[in-house]
Image 1 (tube, rainbow, N blue to C red):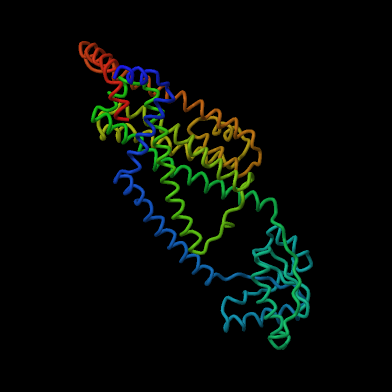
Image 2: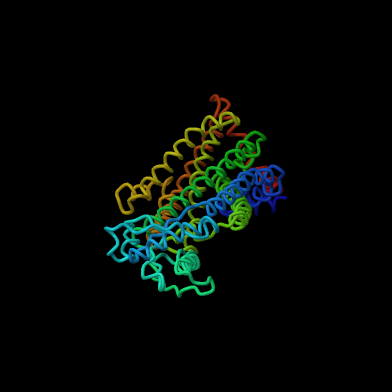
Length: 421
């Protein structure tokens, strides 16, 4: 017994934190409460995915896309008239065609579309015998056959004698890339915020539960409080990654099964593999920063009701922090955006948005190092606050008695902690 107690006493802070993390991770992972916690978000994911898939399918079938015709006056009129007649028979397979405005008729179709000077999916030029489609790549593939059908029908040709379709693909403009990457940044920020807020509450509930059954006091007497806080934070982080893996797998199956494509969002500036890697890292940093704050709050609360009362202001402030990071995202490099990347609670959100818009990587290494430092400071501060409240709470006489009790527990109960954990 004495030898075992002696070995336990030599545990470093990191070793003790690992023992706490391993025990908490396994205890939570195999609990019935965690199973129901996993099932909770799956229902809105399934319902939302099915509703979105059905809505997207309906939109694709009912959407009316206009294609402009820039040919001679005779050819343009014939194409528009034929397309209108065919739409009555085959529906939206044939696009709705209109004659290009007179003030744009003499200009280059590629310039018209790139500069977004007219709201058309494509522009058909040339002649009915040799039509030319100017559009983006996916629009060319979509309308090549229908345009050939309209041109052949307008010429009175047999449907088997389609004219040869030439094409000019329009590269996405710089303005389009910037706008699309902003959408990717917004989606990444929103997902990061939702996951952090949903999963961060587990830290509070776990700490309050162990305060209620006195386990946390036994731990505080046997090992450094810094190790307890670190262990619990990383245990909750590991459990959160399990939850994200389950929800992400189910969500991906529904997303792609409903007919969506990965191209719905533009590729971020750093590329998808690096963007996902940074997303995982920034989630971990955001979770640890918020979790360390929640642990400090939990150290001040004795009941679940007190936890809810104390955590509500923090939750509201975190919502304001998210809005701050979202607003700063609109102006990369501005003073406000730089402030958002430095402020610890908004830094993960602002840096993930920057990864979607700027391809530089060195700044992410700097930001991650800063966030790790903030986690260490917050954990140390939270552990000190908890230690003061546990060791010095109550009347003066009670303080001395409690302190003596803790010192006694530190001498006698270390072997029990090692056995229990």
